[in-house]
Image (cartoon, rainbow, N blue to C red; front, top):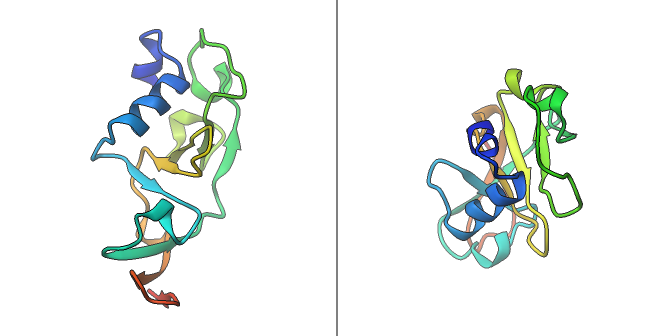
Length: 126
């Protein structure tokens, strides 16, 4: 993420890249069990994160001098620490109509608390 932003691109550019051409190394999630209409096949997993917090896009959090403007179009940054350098979990909540959150890191299995097969009404505990 930092390498991308250091090339003169902004977090909004990164967000657009992720949404327009999904990268297999990123994990996209949706807060709605319908998953934006993609819940018709396979399994749906319920994940919970008590340790993630919304962080500001600033020099302190990123650990580098930023040269992009932060506005309401920039995706929200969620980290499990106060600094990107120490973060083990990094997620972006994209701007706009989508409610999608993309994890730039893996989702620890401890945070996957339940699952259901598409079409089922209720979740089963892991």
